[in-house]
Length: 141
Image (cartoon, rainbow, N blue to C red; front, side):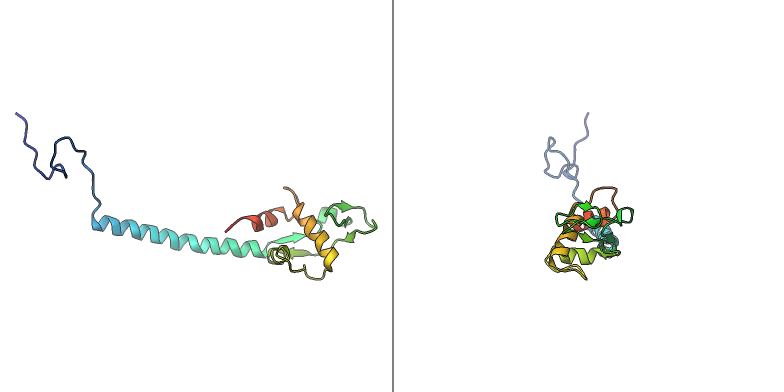
């Protein structure tokens, strides 16, 4: 003989209906607490990342090519090339570059020199000093 099933065994009361577990209020609250603690622990990490991106530096040009000038299109050319600009001898912060990409000049530069330096920064490639900083500025937040 088979045991008769009580109505508690099946939420719909039928024998063929699949049993769906409905989470208790306590389980829902525990899940919400876990999600909240994840958000609390992730937010500071994101804030630290954003701060480090703005404090990273981009040398113009990098130290291995410091004797070169920067042409208006951003390419490195030999020192003394007419129309090219000498390197800055310093690095710009991520914040300075971010502002310059939005229209403000890099500190200590005129319009044409600023454009040449920004073109140089835009042309940075993997393995070049400052590339990771510039790439981080391009990431959406």
